[in-house]
Amino acid sequence: MTTGARTPAVGGLRDVPLPDPVARDYLLLALRLDQRRPGLVDGYFGPAELKARVDTEQLRSPAALRDDAAALRERLAGEVDDPARRRWLAAQLVALETQAAALAGEALPYVELVRRCFDREPVRRPEEPFAAAARELEALVPGEGPLARRLAAWDDPFTIAPERLEPVVDWLVGRFRERAHRLFGLPEGEALRVGLVRGQPWSGYNWYDGGLRSRVDLNVDLPIRAADLIRVLAHETYPGHHLEHAWKEAHLVEELGRLEASILLINTPECLISEGLANLGRRFAVPPDEEAGLLVELYQRAGLAIAADPVAAREAAERQVRITAARQRLDGAVLNATLLRHVDGLDQDQVRTYLEHVALLSPERAAKRLEFIEHPLWRTYVFVYDEGERLLERWLELVPAADRPARFRRLLLEQLTPGAIARDVEVAVAGVRSRAE
Image (cartoon, rainbow, N blue to C red; front, side):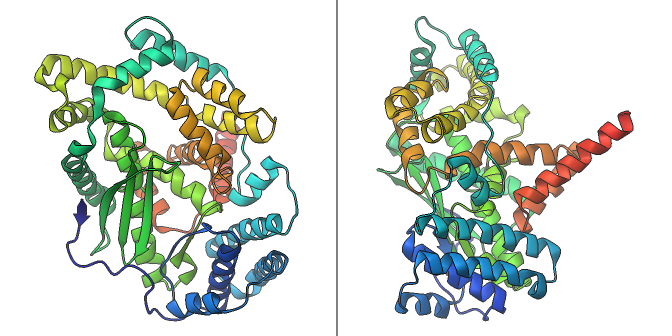
């Protein structure tokens, strides 16, 4: 399943100009830390000789890497002129220093660890909005018995058989790509392909190879529902991760020569921006007034039985839109579950029960989500989806609706940090309060 330009992918490491000293040392630090914490580097398409150098040199200790990160951060004021770039590098280096320190044995409370990694502190969500979403679902989901069981029964008819996924994915991604082209533009030559995998703790993943190319994996461990497929594909492709990475390679790396952007790092502030924009991107990929119609066409293309009755399909799609919106309001419960596990110390069974009863996940999906919460690499990452979306949504809403595509495009191209976004929001809110007084 391939979408975009049909020219051969470049991928991998490429011969590019050597970066300036700060970018060079940032790349070396990240590559060295990845050897101590495998999985930190999510993608690298920078100078091949730097990767080769790290691959052949003696491993540096976590304590030395911590000191390297701190020293590089101290150099920024004298060596990086652009304020936005300096802020971005500083935030990223705090995260790398924190992860190196953890590997060196410096224990941090979970909340402090997350704050240093993502430039944003996780805040426990109030429970009442989850209860309100559950009450709405009680009214929307037909049947009798426990709500979680009724939701699972509702989902069954909208599950797409794995053998029907390929043509449906090609159609959906092509549609999202066309809309992204109109709203945000596409770097010339970008392309992606989609594959199906098993045995992963996530539902979908974008592997960015460089050369404006992505590989997107969909996890078929659990049944893929029609509404979820729309959400996951928009998140991983257009205008989500693929478009962001492609535009940042084209603009930051190729045009501006900021080679620090040629590496993608897990558990750093760039992830909160990336996951937040990928979640928000669904609103641009599928405007609210088109969502029900898109679902009806998806039912038809996926060969779902309900598509045989156009009236029933339309009614189901309209109900599904409302059910999906209510379910999305439960996403914050996953953050609470993470804090219950890593801050409050609840055991796995207690957290799984919370996910089933509050987040209204099926036992299978609750187990998969708990696997993500427990994973050594992802246990801090869980926080970035809901918090990133909430923060960037507030930032987008500071401008009129007609200006939001242009503001969203900034997220695709610029080196923005959660702290800078939060300050923009705080200043705007303070201004409104001042005028009101």
